[in-house]
Every structure is written in C-alpha cells, then in structure tokens.
Image 1 (tube, rainbow, N blue to C red):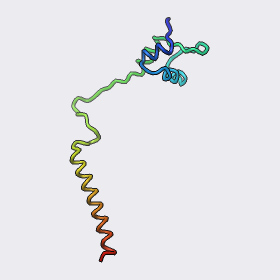
Image 2: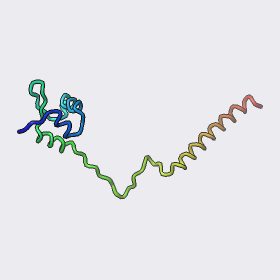
Image 3: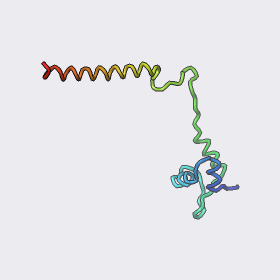
Image 4: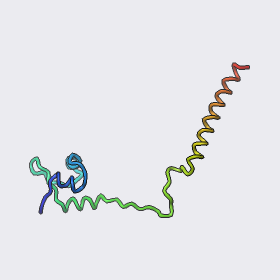
Length: 100
C-alpha cells in the first residue's frame, strides 16, 4: 500500500493543502496519523469520493429559469408603476388634511 501525503492529495483533489488539513482535523476525509504526519490511502480516498458523489439530474422538459423572471422588462415596469403610485398616494394624503 503506497500512502500519499497532504501535498499529493491536495493536488489530486485540486484543493488547497489547508483544506486537506481542515478536513482531516474535522474527520471529514479518511486519513492515517503517524505522529504529526498525515497520510492517505488512495483506495480509501477513492471510496470517500465515490460516497460523496452527487448525481446531477435535470428534467429536459423544463427550461432553466430564474425565480419566475420570465420578462424582466415587465417586472421593471411593474416596479416603477408601484413606486409611482405609492409616491402619488403619499402626496395626495399629505395634501388633503392641511392643503384645503
């Protein structure tokens, strides 16, 4: 069994060394501690990666949308109208009691 060191595992997983140390400290990644040295069994890392794999499935019938923002121009127009009407109502309510 050829064990790998932190540098080799960080390069393999394409993460910073500090991330490997943190994961090991938190018990998130399988490792061996030999005194102050961390070593990793490649087979254990492969199994760990496989266990953490997330399959991305997408329904091909549904288009990709952002939170119902179908027509951004219509949304902007509605927001402007709401703001305008809100200001108009505020002005009218101020004018009635003291303006008559």
